[in-house]
Image (cartoon, rainbow, N blue to C red; front, side, top):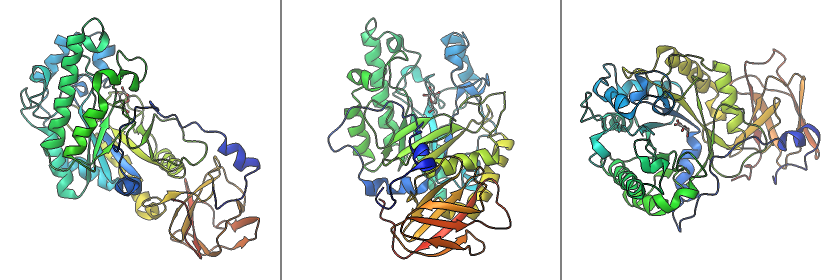
Length: 434
Ligand code: GLC
């Protein structure tokens, strides 16, 4: 942190408490495969995206791991493909829900671990895809088209692993079957990156084998560098997640645990569920509140990350209305305070858990004052920039003092806003953080 003096006390304690848990770090490298910071800038600026887990598992309504955990046979499960006729599927409605939430990119599970593909997939083992079963529709085509029409960045999730293959669970015992699964993976990624125009994000999940070890441990099978060189040939600027065994363009932190600790200097994304019980549709409902979503977003962005918030449409293809409504509430907040989120980078102040965190863009610094901060005056570390003005974002000017060793800001007398009070500081020169 070049801008801020050495930390002490609460600042230091908070900085040391890092609980961002990166999935599968240490993926293998690939010469020249990573995007340049310039090509990744749109993704970092976007900050907030919609994850969509949707597939046959929406029918039993017990989460996307249903095939694995319920004890159902593969054959029984495959029968869902003959019942999967989502009458309310409307990709435009999904895109609208994301836009209303203030989200700037989307990622749809084109194919999850169960193996069922939501597009016309000749490479699918056993033609296990939505155009050749009851639905007779190419959902990926409809989704990407709706994204393109709306100017929404379109991402696709793809799981290399496929539970239908014994070679996934026992690659040594069934080496040819494992190779078959790998061929399916390369073939399907080629389809997804060639048939649907621009794809902005390729979100791999699960290249580990038999649910053990790391994705990188399984690179001998998948050849992720070759796989992603192919994806880059077709989509040179596609942003790629780290879960193919190759290190990827960003780090992922999975799950609803809160983001604590210091600013993280490389691009990262937290993915989590709006409905806590599972990623795929679940008859059990336990939604995050509006304030929980906003606090999560602020805490992640203040540490340099993006948030990919998941919804699970039901078997009819509808995102449950209560979820859409919750997203709209978040969107209303983003409409007012998105200026402190979009196009920002974390800092210059290191976040202090439960008290505050900050973001910046050019000569503006935004301070998110959190519910645990109950003092009238907010003390901040020194800043090597002169503060010209300070106000509540969208509100009144606030008094402040700045010395060589500290800054203090008089918080709004009229009380705080729930869940975050947003301050805007105008500086004499841009903050230097990349
Ligand atoms: C895990 C799960 C999966 C979910 C994903 C989301 O890897 O296997 O069900 O899709 O996390 O990040």
